[in-house]
Amino acid sequence: MLLTAALLGFAGLAPADTARFRRVALIPLPLVYYTPETRLAYGAAITATLRFRRDATDTLARPSQLTVGAAYTQNRQLLLYLPFQLFYDHNRYYAYGEAGYYRYTYFFFGVGRQEVARELYGVNFPRVRLNVFRRLLQLPGRGKLYAGLRYQYEDYRVTTTEPGGLLAAGSVAGSQGSRLTGGGLGLFYDARDKVLFPRRGWVADVTVLPGQRAVGAGQRTTRFSRYAADVASYHALTPRAVLALNYAASFTAGTAPFNALSLLGGTRRLRGYYEGRYRDQNAALLQAELRFDVYRRLGAVAFGGVGTLGDDQTLLRLRQPKAAYGAGLRFVLNRRDHLNLRVDYGLGRQSGGLYLTVGEAF
Image 1 (tube, rainbow, N blue to C red):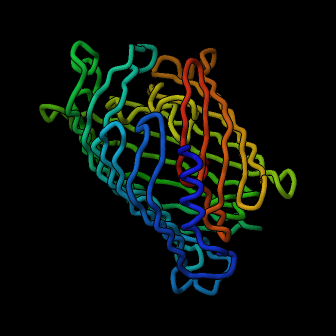
Image 2: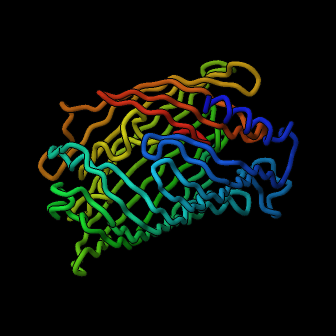
């Protein structure tokens, strides 16, 4: 019922034909989605796919995308958010990130090998993540290499915990809240034929965040560093089928609060597990997705993935993998840039979840 209503709603709002050139395409959406972390969520959003005036006649200019939204969930969570990715001056500059405020509840399952029965906790936090890059090289073909700066701010205020749990006892770093600030460097390589739904090429995002600060309860300050890489490749198998592969790794050194550790699970990494179901200092992930057209705007996917965790004693515990798999449907909202409504159902070990969102997992 939820899927049918969502498809009909988006079909009525999507432009009849966005294949011809338009500098700005606005899609106002009555927002309805579902994830294991929120259950049913509803609200409103406006998604803008655009090209700046300087790039208006450049058919090779990447489309920029911004979404402004507000949602309230079945779990009594409030989300106010503005994610964005911007390309400017014939793809010379690229910026992406988000700004938002969240009043949220999560389940906590422990850290590393110290797994616990799930503990419900509440948190309020504003969050800003900003990444600004400039193109350094235009490589043969579509390849572009960018370098730039990253900045993040998050004031994670834990408001409630379960009596008798690890968070209530204060035995986990950041269990009483933390304020994260810091900047770093990044490299970004993009050789995709399209941004929102690539059929060929690959993309790589490398992050170096040294000396991050976390100010916890009692103004106690800890420092940690994070190094991460997220790579995806796309392979057109037939005119109607694409194989997408994603390789990701994250490594943390120092004392990081639990909410800043590497994790597995959620709408993008190892669908089928609750977001943060597994978290530790280090994580590595490989996932694949077969995407194929079904009929007109309708498509389908099958996906699977495997990930592993590690700490300062064992870099990655390769003999303790976490696996998940699933399938889903796609519905094209914007034909020109192939922006999709995404409906997935993922399954993990004694776990499962429905995901109804906009845009691809990777």
